Length: 380
Image (cartoon, rainbow, N blue to C red; front, side, top):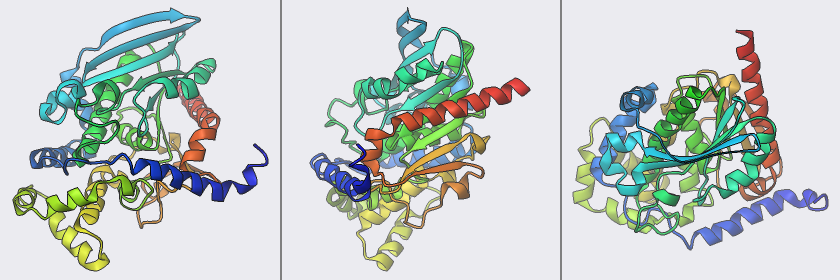
């Protein structure tokens, strides 16, 4: 390993771009931008609920029942496997039809109640195995429990016609984020009733984006640890290594359909089409790429979500050579949006190489943050 490290920066970029070549074989957003009604409902919900830290008002009112499939106690660890109707699916059944609307999870909790971290899945992670092997088992040795949630549109929640991780609609990504906000905070409440806490939430890449959205709506101070993410997903899908996997020709064709665009134009409190045409006139990019910038910012940028209740408990990991998550597109930094956040750069590492070799560092930081919360609570 030592002989490899001096060449890591250039090698890290090379590995990221090689993985990009494989991703192009599996396209994203293969069907559409999404039904205009879904876009309209999601825009209103983001603006009036998610942006105002009000998601848990609906979750508490709905209080979906958690059904346990398994509960096993072994070697001082209680393992749970369960499911429940996603609160988002109860609010918007058309957003999450059939199996997509059932939230599946596994929890690994020490018999002696203590801190717990939710680990969200990254792109392509349809099972629990990688997170269990790379994170859960070692954290349990330090007395930290873990909850693993399946992403909507992944694993047991994958629509029957979806090919692997190829989300069919751009809105599927926005629905995923909204659903995970509700589901993760519902699971925090569940584990708290069992006596556990304090809490953290983390994820890698897409899981990091989802973790920071979910953490933004927590009604309790928690540690939020986004890994290999950024303050908005916009640069990733328009300029990053994953951008060539987006089916831009299909999305462009839909934006050239006057029947579709007229439905978008009628959505209240937005000017997306006007902004799209203005940006295209200035930068020369396609309508589809500029609309992707606009929608990704509107639905994923931390600018439009609540600031965590205690940003000093938040820790961000960035990879210096990351070719997937770009940070030089004029977007706000974490320090600008989350005062007192700690940002840790991993020098020389890219997106893929960091994922392969830095899990031990991520586990360590999560454990440190949870221990700090315990110490703070002990003083109260």
